[in-house]
Image (cartoon, rainbow, N blue to C red; front, side, top):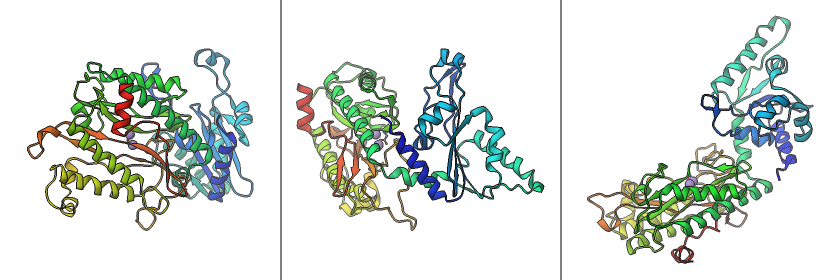
Length: 434
Ligand code: GLY
Ligand code: MN
Ligand code: MN
């Protein structure tokens, strides 16, 4: 259940931080796919974070100060349109149900906004995020500036409202953590299903379909991002999503797939053998990535900074690359030269929340990696991708492995919210045998 009080508290907190001035936060536009068909609609994450309101053509306006006020502009109730497109709230019901102080028709925006903007000290707005909205806001400001001789003034400072919201979004509330646990559980269940359904000869898209089946069946509204279902050599293409090749006996299958539940993403990668049993070479590389992930997870706690998990994973991976004769020389020399990047070329995680690569700074104001703190949610996702090359033993060619979990930083360490998806060799092989 969406907790509407939570959204109201967020609006109050933002207005308190603003102290003075007006914020304009539009939701995302509908996008046309072709002619009169649209892409599936996804609201803007900042707008949703403050409203819980999922309809397109809506704007939140917040007026800070001694009498803070929240105003929603949204589509009119329209019985005719509802016959075609389904339910819409309309201003009155939206105001009552979502707890705004005022609500108006989206059609009144150009008439009312110059009045609301007049004589405000500051404008909090995400300038540059959307050219259409930039033009509209500029027109309102110009309208006010044209009335300067009447004693009306326009805000003389524009502050990027996203900066304040990014910091708020980084710390997940108990409600958000609950939703993210559910999102993770659905995605973990889908990975389990894939492990049980996979067979040599099936197509990658057939396994992708198992994910969609499980996501929708469990109440998720959409995949959180384009699923990567990559058999064999395809796993060495980091953003592979053609998902149209046949799965081969003896190959590994890397799947990076997560779902969105009430706006919140899960992001899981599992890699497992198409035939249910790791070969010796696959197992060697897999165990290496798994131990790199364990080392990284051990660093997810409030005593660490953002980069500690990456450093820990890299340390284990580089030693492993040397042991497997993928890299030569000392650990320090391989780290220093960057030779490991032939096999590990991405970072070990990112913030997770409403966006799969969620809002939030990775460094503090002084430019140092920021400290991890209870309530932050991040992914831990080391990997190893071995393309055929003269300097690589042939039995490792085309092995691509990533293991990705979602971690909540807690007071004492972290909670892996995606732990339902098996990842040890023994657990994966057991599930695939069952
Ligand atoms: N699925 C996107 C990522 O792992 O970053
Ligand atoms: Mn990720
Ligand atoms: Mn991922």
